[in-house]
Image (cartoon, rainbow, N blue to C red; front, side, top):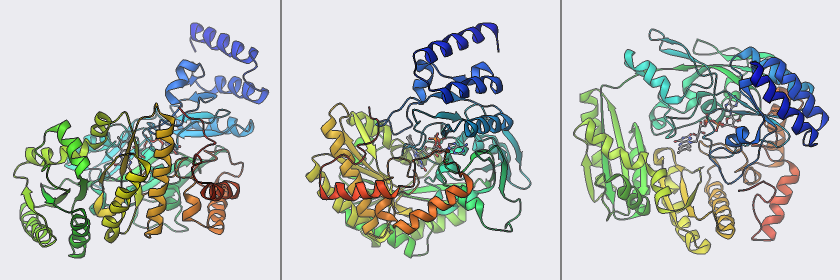
Length: 507
Ligand SMILES: Cc1cc2nc3c(=O)[nH]c(=O)nc-3n(C[C@H](O)[C@H](O)[C@H](O)COP(=O)(O)OP(=O)(O)OC[C@H]3O[C@@H](n4cnc5c(N)ncnc54)[C@H](O)[C@@H]3O)c2cc1C
């Protein structure tokens, strides 16, 4: 630590402590962290910790006690050991792009950010594997693998920023996941540190591992079980050719059914995405890609493989889409045109940001045959809540992303948006689906978990958490609702109109 840094460090810490803002345990923890982390890797001033007060779900904010930015696995071990010894909760954080509040801090806890653990440790083109530190950006993996004609298939729309550690914790998906699988299907090994500082490793370099599938338990565990410090992923060959069909429909129900028809025909597109009319209009104004503005819905259906495979598949896909009622079909003729067709879908979130001060992105999953039913229910809810909603989503997975448009400066609008979102998620469960497709539960969907799972199932989740984190200090109060919370949520249903997350700090 430089002398100047040391000076500011001590000065602030003393002031902070003098103001009585930290209790004894917190003060002792900060002192102890100073001994194991370089000065630049521990933040505690308000202006330094402010960027960490929320993730992509910016409606809820909370300043943490401090932010630790370890650079090595050994430092992660030290930080966790100290937090356990001082009974201080820890919220792991990757890039903070999560949309369910999973990385939102706790006032009395620290944020453990992996931003400085961002090295690609190894790319092995022969075994088609990459070994990565947790802070490596998703897109950086494919960029590093590109010289070997390989890439990492799971492609969240946030891939330019989100980290592989965050992807593992959320079991993230993307356009390519219909054909190539989610994170869980593309990660073969995870190394992580438990709250007590012990290192655990799950998965093997082989196809199967003996024992219980704890790799599957780790993936999607939302930072509640261990801090991921190394991830080994599978790389896949870049397909030589990819072409995409843009199909217009004059009716939402026909478009929803077309998705089910494509899959039922035995086709597995490399991407099958849908946009409704409000979404198409918003993105067209933004990217000017030539989308059909008269269409009630647009489907983007991609094929990849060799030129012969793609030609045959595009023919079959077009035929199914026509039979399902497509009014117009365009097929990309060049890579440039393919990128233009996708540009609207890829820019849907910023396009929503252009037409509304705020938007709230939901993430439920339903059986594909019910897509049209849910979209029609959402239309009805729009009228009831007095808010607009645009839909742009991974249709092939039945993973819906309704974007509820609202103005966050008006608390009543936000209140309505929250209730609207909750009702959509409950409708997903009623249709045989789930409250999350890829964004995780975090704090956002913790109430609707009460609708999805009964008390015994929730107890089983707590049992797994306790096996990894008996002190309940790793990202507590996220993802699994307590009995008490579910009772409160039940009462809220009786007294309509209450805030679904009345207990959370907000903007
Ligand atoms: C514009 C936009 C588009 C998006 N599109 C998609 C999409 O298409 N598909 C998709 O799946 N998601 C999408 N997301 C959501 C988000 O990008 C993903 O959930 C992503 O995986 C989060 O990664 P992160 O590094 O930002 O994690 P964070 O937001 O920092 O953390 C997410 C969760 O992971 C935990 N965590 C992070 N790192 C670790 C670690 N090393 N060990 C243990 N736990 C950890 C945190 O505690 C938290 O619970 C989108 C988000 C935005 C803003």
